[in-house]
Amino acid sequence: AVPTAESTLQEVNSMINKRLKDAIFTDQWSELCMDSLASFGYVLVTSQRMQGVLLLILAKYYHLPFLRDIQTETTRTGLGGYWGNKGGVSARMSVFGHMVCFLNCHLPAHMENSEQRMEDFESILQQQFDSQSATSILDHDVVFWFGDLNFRIEDYDMNFVKYAIDSNKLSMLWEKDQLNMAKTMEPVLEGFHEGVLRFPPTYKFDMGTSIYDTSAKKRKPAWTDRILWKTKNPESKASTPQTASKRHSGVLQAGGLVVSQHSYRSHMEYAVSDHKPVSSIFTLKFPYKIDVPFVQLAVEDEWNAVSDAIVRYKMAQTFPRSSWDWIGLYKVGFRHQKDYVSYVWAKHEDPVGTNQHYQVESLPKGSGEYILGYYSNNLSTIVGVTEPFQISLPTSSPSSSPSDSSEYSSEDDSTLVLLRTKSRSPSPGKARQRGRRSRSRSPVLPKLQGLNLRPKSRDKSKGRSPSPRAGHGSKRERLVPEPEAPVSMAAPPSRSSGHSRPGIEVTTPEPNERNKVVMRKTPDGALAPSDNSKDVGL
Image (cartoon, rainbow, N blue to C red):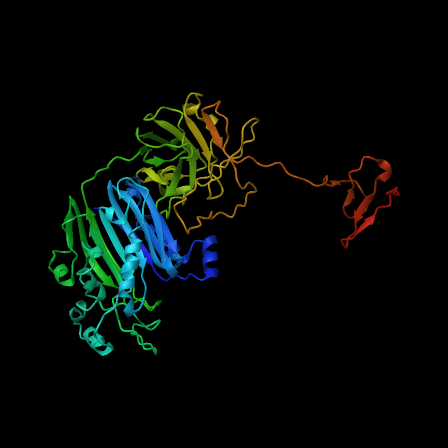
């Protein structure tokens, strides 16, 4: 079983001033989801946003090396495809070798637009991915389709719908639900399944209450918010509420892949919207097609000294390594792949498959649980992690110099030394070697669209685009920012001493004795010429 979590939101505040703010700062919904799930070991894998439609994919950190080929897409259907108030966003990935796609949609509203909803859904299904194994959405082994699909309940009037809800006779409304009706008629919906609708319609409510719409429009309650899934099985047919209730625990099996739905419910206690949120819990069971990570790392169970901070790793022959790869030190409970404590650039001078050693200095003081993760620049994800290990360092002990360690003093030893950066943003030290061009090598996560992964440190370094040392004469590198030379517009004043008068006398640094002016600071703070000052020639 592979525990994953996906968060989907529609009608997130998409006003222009809000979108500009989200472009600078991480949006509040993303922060809330990451903060809430980080304590359970979930890490953000990728995200995609289209105005008010937001999709977040999170996974247990130890599954990250087996999530590959991660891509996201967006399809706008509002205003003929030019506006993103309606449409769909998707995220796909290979999960232990099985292709899985998550599709979040916001379809057109109103009772009379059922056909338009189906047309928009067909347009969204045309999304294409850059892949040989699954180029379109329906090519994936499993597709999860969810969102504000906006399907309504036909024929019955408001009074009858409310009667069925109040008397808990929801089955009376199933057959008139537009989505259930479309499943029996629309070929594009063939194979899509949904759990039994045992919860009341989730739309429309008066804001801040659990009371259905009492405004002048009096919108009829409807199951607008839905979660469906489909397995890549040509023989599977679309399910109706009647057939869904007959299936055992919502279990579907296709080609050795088992999808089990454990719950499908609404959350009536939330009242921040005119919709009620809907959630579902699934379990995916399948034979592993991939069970070995691209990079295997090994560390000591506990780091009690700087000399313990060594990671040994080896890479698979097929791993597309890059000189921009890096290894991050993460505190257990980290939120995303750039939420590290410190990092070191990966080194690829030795042949693939051999062990390499990295020594890390200025580690977090005190005690805590950490992991190391190898981030691949080409794959834009973590491709190898360690088991959690303990770091227990004295809070006041001085850091030992790497040259003091006899174990790693050989020039032939592939050892990198990293002093922990003050900023959470990766910033290796600057190199100003002759004949070499400086370049920025800060690790980035281009797939995390809509998120600004800001450093939390208050340190404000002047170096905006630092680069690591470019020299390769030694196998040992110290990745430490070099202090920049101070820049002065004028020579600083010098202080003179030995005067009997009170106050501080300041002498201008002019070599010409004739132009020397001695100023004294009076007790009230003013500057006045000293008695021994000379006239200044103009």
